[in-house]
Amino acid sequence: MPGLFLAGSDVASGGVMGAMAGGMLATIAAEPLKVLGYLRKATRKSASAA
Figure: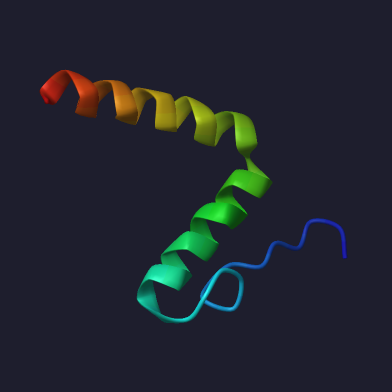
């Protein structure tokens, strides 16, 4: 089905961490360019804080 993205623990693995990973994978699949820009900004902030 076009436009359907699975997210949650059924995608990556069981439990809360699996649900978080599944949600992140679905976000990257739905909007890859927006997510990559966000991750670049987040990693620059965390690297400069360290």
